[in-house]
Image (cartoon, rainbow over all chains, first blue to last red; front, top):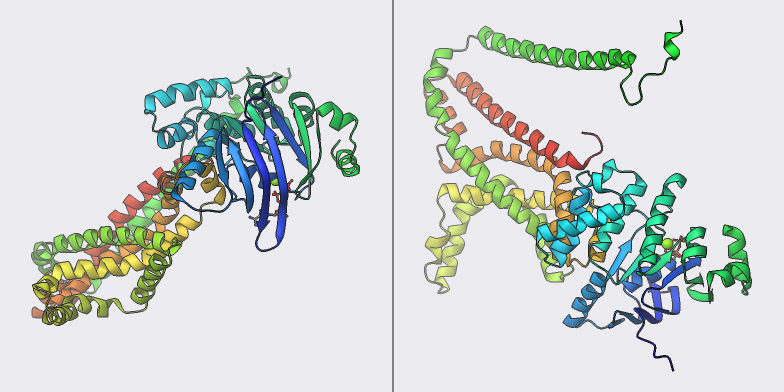
Length: 254
Length: 287
Ligand SMILES: Nc1ncnc2c1ncn2[C@@H]1O[C@H](COP(=O)(O)OP(=O)(O)OP(=O)(O)O)[C@@H](O)[C@H]1O
Ligand SMILES: [Mg+2]
């Protein structure tokens, strides 16, 4: 019998209600194993971003449990321990936003070392060494002393990825990382994500980038009105979708 | 020969571009030169006016050192008061945004009360009314409180100005902090920063940039409002000038002099502000 190790991310029965009755997530379960790349697809407003943001508690789930690398936090409750557990989950979880959200008052290098120095208390020299490695890895060595406003969107997103990776996260969350980019800049960001997946990072990505979903993802999940309606390998989802709404949605984006 | 179609070497600036670059450079120098001339003309006009109204320059020169000796007080009061005001403004702004109902209502009342009453009344409160409160407390049995709150004129002035400007600046700081996009907070949180770290490392440095121009305004206003401490008999700039002017019936000279001194101080501050703003703008696309 194959003994399965604990999943890296385990989301159990998550609900999210905005205000009093906007029920956005309706009991979502998700398990992502170490090294797995998962792509989430779904119509606008179906709750994809909200799910990602519940995983690192940028959004407080209304019910359910989130577990990242064996740290489990349940919705509700407010003991002291919980706050620090949420911080621990965030340290293990990198997130890339559609709008990059680089710190504009810091140079590229300062952006990348900010997490390790401020959050992990690393010495600056040590953080700089690793940051340079990362910038080299995303191909931005020569931009290290530039301010974000002087970079193209694609370059900014690659810096944002490096900033997250500098924390040595266990899992990376991507929320439409390429949808704010001009078409010719999409490739350089997807390429970095692809290499990240190949090097064994655990990835949960919301992206309509078909190449990534089809050729890089291990698994694709379709969300509709806060529920999964279909799940499977990219081949199955793209070639043989079963659900009617999945077919409609794919017809829309293909 | 068709010289125009010969491609220039890759990467080099084509020769015809130099003309344009020169034109831009010339226009800039010309503008700078015209500005200087305009300022000189304005200065000469000012001096001419002062001469036409038969100002007694000798008298002014004679009393200049005496009046200037009061600028120490003016600076002392203004700098300490602005330091206090900045401190209170940051605390006040955090209070105004706090989720703690006690802190929030306390900060809100502070801003409302101070902004709703005249500075002049507040100055007298600190100087004249506070000892009376002290006496009442002393009668209730708190030893030594009366002499503790019976403040000399300068500390009373610093407190009055600092607390007053702190209230106005609270709103400036709060608006500055709230002008920073939510995405910045989210990026900081996603890295695992605590709220305090987020504020200190990400939000506040960016808010500072928004805050500096209005705060410089406040500072300039404060330099001038510091003359209010003369009400309590402190021999600062304006008090000295007015005293001398009255005694010799040459108030015009002394008032013009003291006005010019204040102006010079404020020009210095404005210069500092510009330098600071330029530094703050370092992350901008255009420099
Ligand atoms: N902070 C919020 N307050 C209230 N409603 C919200 C909030 N955030 C999201 N919503 C609502 O929740 C629903 C799901 O939003 P979400 O951003 O998760 O969708 P999405 O699947 O990511 O869509 P998109 O593809 O457009 O990014 C939407 O109806 C949205 O209006
Ligand atoms: Mg979204």
